[in-house]
Image 1 (cartoon, rainbow, N blue to C red):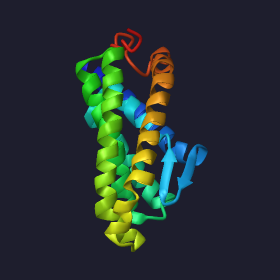
Image 2: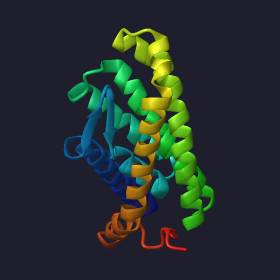
Image 3: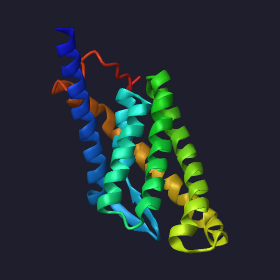
Length: 193
């Protein structure tokens, strides 16, 4: 009996994770704006919510699936873009969900998301310096010169936008998943305290 119950819970978890990965991927079609060679989208919202519900390792797995799907379908930057997308999503969602895992309340979510913005921005600036010269065929100095005028503000805006949408959507979406029986009713969601 317990084995059957665990399988049912694992199946539900896999369905929810597939749903989050699909929603993150669909965001690329619905809300995606190009700013020079950078892409502004809100896919990290759903990757972060998967981490808030199931933990940071889950967010990393969902980020990997989404980055792979993006690489084989939409990306014009190939493996370089996939590495950047995975690293950015992992830095953002992994940081936010790791902090939220240990402080499951509004304060923990706020600290997690603010930290996520900072970590993701730092990671993306470093990766742009290291990787962008290869796929843009531009001197590293050109990329470095873009930090104050493009890379820094872009990543801060992208992180802030994703954080705002996490705040708007997390509680209603997790509540809907609980009401459909996809998450346990006893699951601890203290996002409003």
